[in-house]
Amino acid sequence: MEYLPVLVLVISFVALLSIGTPVAWSIAISSVLTMLVSIPMMPAFTTVSQRMGTGLDSFALLAIPFFILSGQLMNKGGIAHRLIAFAKTLVGSLPGGLALINVIGAMLMGAIAGSAMASASAMGSILGPEMEKEGYSREFGAAVNITSATTGLVIPPSNVLIVYSLASGGVSIAALFLAGYIPGILTGLFLMIVASVWAKKKKYKIGERSKLKEVWKTFIDAVPSLFLLVVVIGGIVTGIFTATEASAVAVLYCLVLGFAYKEITVRSLPEILLESSATTAIVMLLIGASMSMSWVMSYENIPQDISSTLLAISENKIIILLIINLLLLFVGIFMDMTPAVLIFTPIFLPVVVDLGMDPVHFGIIMVLNLCIGLCTPPVGSVLFVGVGVAQTTIQKVLKPLIPLFIAMVVALFLVTYFPELSLWLPRLFNL
Image 1 (cartoon, rainbow, N blue to C red):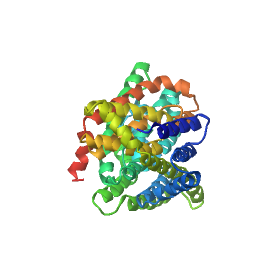
Image 2 (image 1 turned 120 degrees about the horizontal axis):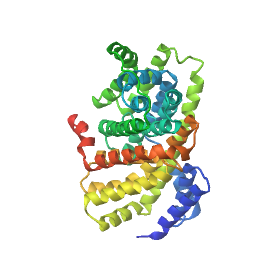
Image 3 (image 1 turned 90 degrees about the vertical axis):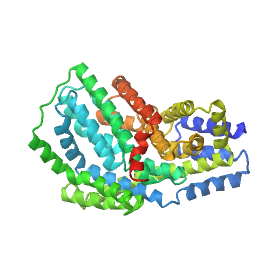
Image 4 (image 1 turned 90 degrees about the horizontal axis):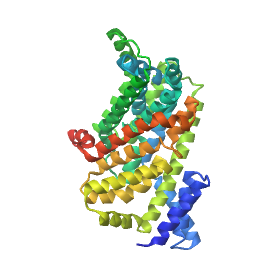
């Protein structure tokens, strides 16, 4: 194994991050420095820049800006209010009712918008003040909001699963979308159990039981929003359209819904488009830089060397998966999800495939694992959004966050060692 390229890559990347260099630039610069070990300066620069460009030349990636735009349209289109109202009638009378509403609302919002940050922002701003009014601590509300927001990255449609499909060399997006349902719902259930126990222990106020008429009314209000899932996922699974075409359909549907609800106007569209463009630019820069690093690692044989090292440690599937999960949990602390998926999929996927694991199953494990990283400092983007919306500090949120964090880890290991939790639905649809 050539240690010099690995050392240059790791040391330069960590050093750049530690001095506050943006993640995308850290990835690109460390890629160039690694290439300089093997080839002259000009070819190194041109190769990395070319790989950044060609890395974005993919029809599947076109789905990402469309899903980002549909998420923005939903966030501004009054959908969150209707989903929260529906969730409130279902679980509002249980211990920790408002916390449970947050989890269910985030799962529904995440499943429709496909964005953890959009979900954390919407749920936190709407439910946060209401939870405080009912006697819940601000920190507990923020902790529930932060962890539950990540479930939408596993429950489809999910931009990260599209990115994994690209990084893995073409794993079926439809299969990945179906595979995410049970793990995402399971994680949400675990978070609800912990939130309910915590609320009972703290003796938070319990709401009144909703009448059947109320449940029905809020359900009817939420149906147009929920129907988007049927349109998008149903269309992909039945082969009516691809994931990219489905994302465009989602934009059109959300636009019509926003106008119908009178929450979106022609005047508000430029702001929505501008926000979507800014988010898309950041995501695409990360993807381009990550694809270049992935190619550089492949050129230097780093994935093959790491694969050989891991298999030399043990050929026991349980041990290897434990090591990979621990490494990804560590990576998630320091790296955002999109670059982590693009960089580490080519490294770990060959290892697990050699052990007989389905790439769809591993994709869900990887995304679920890295979701935990979004809730941890110093790079946890959802953590910062949740804390910012709640107007509190990370230090204060950590205490109620730890039990919820443990619940997510338990769900991760269940999904890791029980493949049918991920694979049952795709197999049911012959995917």
